[in-house]
Image (cartoon, rainbow over all chains, first blue to last red; front, side, top):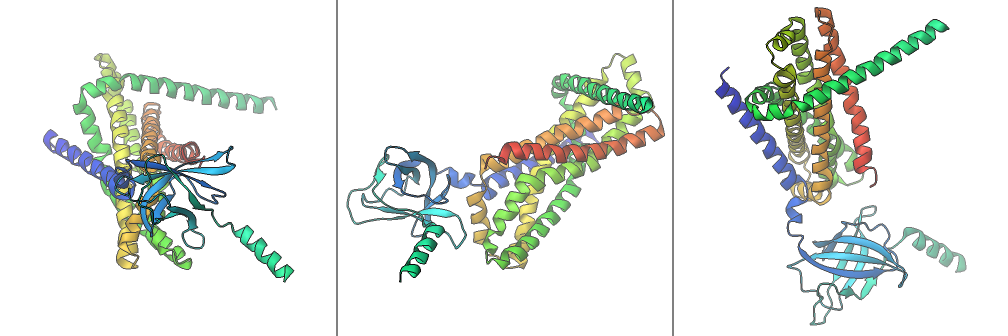
Length: 152
Length: 260
């Protein structure tokens, strides 16, 4: 076995390994979608965020346009403050856009759905989404249903 | 009673003595890494024997592990009508756990045992002593290049394992069982995070590379210089490497993913 052969094989091995890492990065992980993560931030206040998490998707008509980057409790408003990161090319949301927390499927993860309104002015970086609808908590619905049934 | 106590004490002392020698050996080996980098030709030859020659077993097992994951995942997700989540299941289990761990176990069996046998035989035939006689430091000439080669090879092998496994899962899930190809990839991309999952997997496999090579080289260095001693050292390498990989995997998983 010549040195040349060994060097060629090691070179090929390293190349294949790097190609595998590259494939994992681009094809398997979110690196390719994250590269367009430069966008603008909006804030939204919710009474109850349910099971929303950081990195949950934000959609318009089911199309993903951004992700949740931060969730904190705001003690002044006594509400959950959610920071939304939207992609730069989706800058057409009017100021009366509504944000609702929905669940994908019966047991799926929760996401924020945006519904654009009719105003001409659009939301800019740092603006707040005024109209929000909290997550549906199953226990609340069940207890409402039971009290309705009991009272009727 | 006293004999029993004495036995226990002797075993404890031997254990700590062994750990101490292994630690000194490790420090010596790390000290030789600089020389191994300067004379990379030696390391190249070792990468060939531990990395390139392990490729076949890694690719084949990666493919089959991925295919089994695809099949099992499909059967179970189909009960909940959630076949689209197959991609997440295959990719996350490969990248986070199975890729580094199975690669580590296979590496210990394929390359670690060979390293121990080689070093043990070198010791038995007094080649190491001969090197020292010629003022060649075996730490720098023999151990450091092999150690470095293992650390370089291991993450590459684990990455190849995971990538081939994802393709194997794709082949079974999408090709044979009819999961939608678009949702297989898009769901995967939506939930596998680059820095959180891929990078942590690479770190894991690098740690396993350090552990497996350290154990393999030390067992060879520490072997009783007889035919029986070398065979016993080879067995010890495989057993201890497997235990180290599984134990370290738990600790690393708890550190990396414990808080989510």
